[in-house]
Image 1: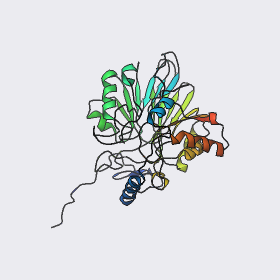
Image 2: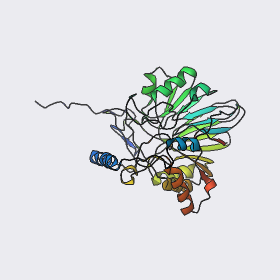
Image 3: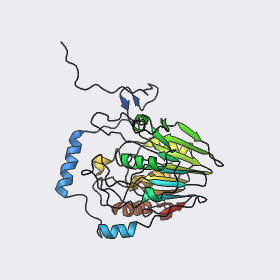
Image 4: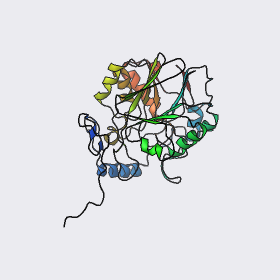
Length: 339
C-alpha cells in the first residue's frame, strides 16, 4: 500500500500555462530564483558571529532625530505624498487617498514578542490620517502586510478598497474585508473619481511570498503603476534586480519612482530578493524615471546593514552613475513630496 503524503501541495487556482510566472502549485520569478535553506542557515550564523546589524553611526536616538520629522497629513485640496517609513507611502490628491503596504505596528511579525522590532516610532499615524480610499499591497510578507494595521485602518475607514496580487483576496475576506480586487502582472483596475482618472496596474517584481509553513509562493508579488490625474507613480514593492523591470519603463512614462534602498546585505544572499542602492539607481535610469524616492529603509533591521547606511550608499551610487543627487532622494520619515 502506497503511503499518502503528509502534506498536500496547494493547487494554484489561478494557474495559466501561457504565463511564465504561473506554476500549477503557485508562482515563480522569471527566470526562476531558488532559495537554499543551507544559505539561510549560513547567513543566520554569520549574522550572529559578526553581531550584525551594527547600530547607526551616531546611535539610535540621534538617527531618529535626524531622519524623522513631525507628521502632517496634507490638506484635501493638496496633491502630495508622505513617506511614513519602510514601504508605507500615503498618496493624496483632492479626489483620492492611497496608502501602500501600511505597517505601523511595533513588530513586523505574527508574534508580539518575537520578530523584527520597529526602531523608529509610528506615532498616531492612523488616528491622525484624515481619509483613506485605497490600500495597495505588494505581497504577503509581514513587513508589508500587517494584520493589526489593516484591521485598524478598516475599522476607521470601512469603505476602503484593497488591491492585492493574485492569491491574497482570501486573507482579507477571512477578516471581513470584502472590497478587494486581485491583479496579475500587467492587469489594471480603473477607478472612478470625481474629476481625475485613476488607474492601478500591477507590474512584475522579483521576489517571493510566504506567510506560513506551507504557503511559499502560493500568492503572487508585484509592484504597482499608479496613474493619477496627469501623474504616473511607480511603487516597486520588494524586488531583486531583473531586466524584466525594463518593460515597465517601456510601457509607462514614470514621474515618480518609489524604490527600495534597504535590506540588501549580504549581497550573496539578498541579491535575488532585495536590490541595493546601487541597483536602485540602475532601475531609476533603466526606467527613465524623472524623480525617485528611496523607501524600505530606516524602520526595521531586517538584514545586515545599519539603519543609516542606505542613504549614504545611495549618494555614492548616484555619484558613480553621474546622476544628480536631486534625481533620487531619501526623505526623512513623515517627509512630504509634492505631486
